[in-house]
Amino acid sequence: MTATGLPMEVPAEGLPTRVRIHEVGARDGLQNEQTVVATEIKAEFIHRLAAAGLPLVEATSFVHPKWVPQLADAEQLFPQLGDLDPHRLPVLVPNERGLDRALALGARRIAVFASATESFAQANLNRTVDAALAMFAPVVARAKDAKVHVRGYLSMCFGDPWEGPVPVAQTVRVCRELLDLGCDELSLGDTIGVATPGHVQHLLAALNEAGVPTSRLGVHFHDTYGQALANTFAALQHGVTTIDASAGGLGGCPYAKSATGNLATEDLVWMLHGLGIETGVDLGRLTATSAWMAEVLGRPSPSRTLRALSHKE
Ligand code: HMG
Ligand code: MG
Image 1 (tube, protein in one colour):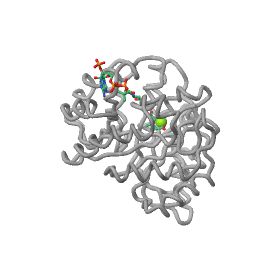
Image 2: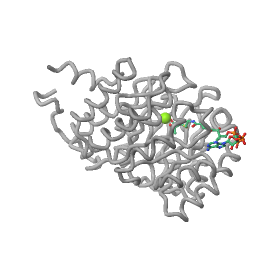
Image 3: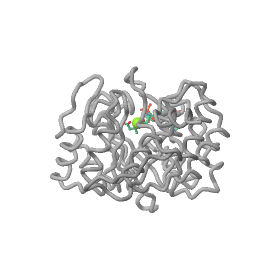
């Protein structure tokens, strides 16, 4: 670390010059926390993340409140973000009911969320993989008509807690289906954090071979086995420029008890800035925000960078 609390900048060959971080802490992070955070605190969290320069701050989900009680306040929260550009505030929408709720509040960027495996499709959406895709079809079509940007998440792209390793061809098949529905971009989820860098590059190459350009792919790593940054570096080498991360490493995965949550945004920014890759993020403002949220939740953040910077003085 340098005296400024910033990494020394030493670029590596063949990497993108700019990366867009898709911040998921307020959604993927808070949905997995035991504590239900007050709506006003969530609004402050999202405002502070946006002010720290994160271009996209996923705000909430319009799902069934019984399935995710932590995000049951979407109707109250979204209007409190009215001063932010809704194009910067993606929201999750599983079905037409969710889309109606999101559109009524002025959402301009939505995400549907599929699974590469049957087990997780059942656990998360109460349907088979194909029935879930059929549920998304009218959602994506209506969103596109309304000129709303659509992300397609795909969970369990590498491994599944019930089914074990997931064949690459199986993941590629569902990715293709999501794109054929009209999704603008995909986010490849390593939901339980079992991927390793070679697997990441193999999947990305297989997707390219299946006609999916890298420019439409983002990556969404969880850090259960400490591989999230290594996997991110592998994706960068492949040319991926959209990377999901969660402020302070918030969250976990209800289906993998040891999962430590998403890749922490601070750890990602430290690596990217060290590589000389632009993100637009102010690391100091981001760490102050995550430190504050850790206090709200009453538990220390798993982010190594956040811990290191907090103990700097
Ligand atoms: P279901 O029970 O099959 O729903 O759940 P249904 O269609 O049979 O409807 C049952 C009732 O729910 C009806 O009410 C509907 O109106 C209502 P009733 O008539 O009985 O009074 N309902 C809704 N209410 C509010 N908003 C809605 C909605 N839809 C139906 N949108 C459903 C199906 C999809 C709704 C349910 O399974 C669900 O909400 N799942 C959400 C699960 C979730 O949010 N998981 C976390 C996100 S995925 C993730 O985190 C992974 C990711 O981070 C990537 C990675 O890491 O891999 C993205
Ligand atoms: Mg996730």
